[in-house]
Image 1 (cartoon, rainbow, N blue to C red):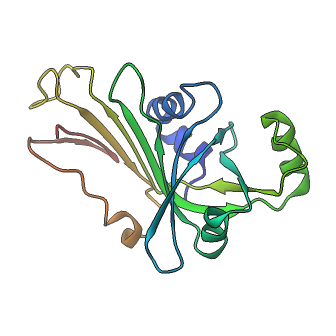
Image 2: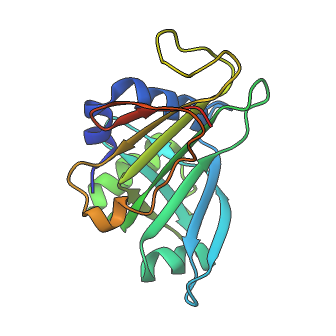
Image 3: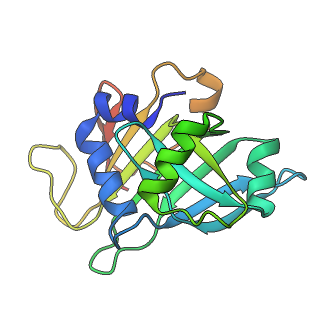
Length: 185
């Protein structure tokens, strides 16, 4: 499970593209998927906070917080962009931040309301994906103009069972470069 900073150090351009989409409206805005007690999915809007140290969310007392406290698995998706169909996705595990100094610093910098019953969670990154639909990547065989470019990063230290379920639909040949995959869907 990589922290945001470890992921960003490994793939800075991909991390920056995801950060831009999650923060395209100023403060972070996206959708958080959690696992309900019965194993089903639950989706909620959230305001992620991205710093040099990590990806965080202040989560109020709610079903999503109880989901994360019980089963930290999550997926986060960017809110749709107004000018394109680009999208960003990260998935991994959420864990509560218990260091009171770190919580206080992030609460102050993110202007978290002090009178609200929230808890701070850090989100690790097992999988990161960025889809760009409005650009052509020169030199990528099989990727015609107008086709989406999908870049996927898998944490090289994540257990293979975590990474295995990810599948990107393939309709054209792909080019692999380490953990980053470019493909047309």
